[in-house]
Length: 259
Image (cartoon, rainbow, N blue to C red; front, side, top):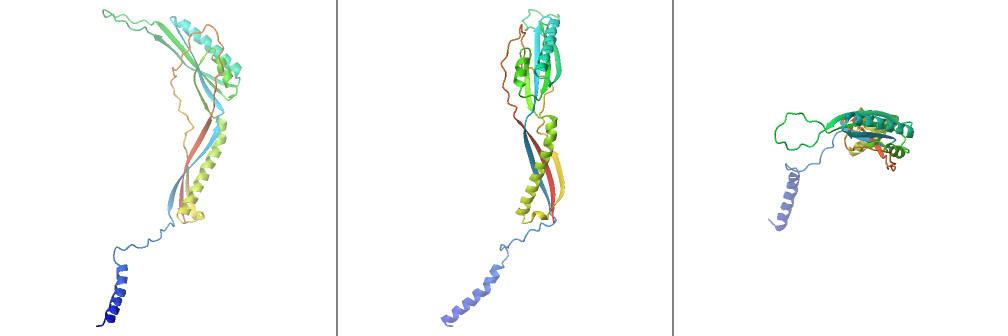
């Protein structure tokens, strides 16, 4: 056979075997399109609103110590009454509530004894105290009121938050923000799946309040500060307060089914 004949035969053999290699097992195939009709999609969403605090919750306290329990209690009673009167005079709109009246003995430090004694220990003195909770919306006059009350009482704690009326007004805004975020996310998911947002049918909407605005409060009174016995009411410089703001949050979960 001539050289030209060999060349023609080789060309024919290559043309025949080439398709068989393209169809060999294990060859990568083009992925089929994913069907999304009837798919149920769970979409979490989130919304929040912020509002400047409009309420202060102040805890004042008085504590006295004396060898005579009655004398210590009398001073506490007198100063608490005077302190409450000062708060009412400086802030007539404030809400006052007394709580946490306590009395307990204070024992001396134990000294080494040469022998055991069955005699009961006697208290060296008595410590008596009481707490006063003040709730006010007069944040402008708060420093002046606190400074006046500190002539007799000590500040145990202070926190800022929102009034019930403000919380009710913000609830509608919080729900609207969460639902808007839900619809935005549904539209984004539809585009990612190659679908139109109009093809999404909202099957279920579950609104769930997070409760993050509720601040946990300790039920037991804190003994962080103690007021010493005062012979006269000394003037106190006004403290500085920054009420800040509160963030209200809401989570919502929607179930979406595509046509």
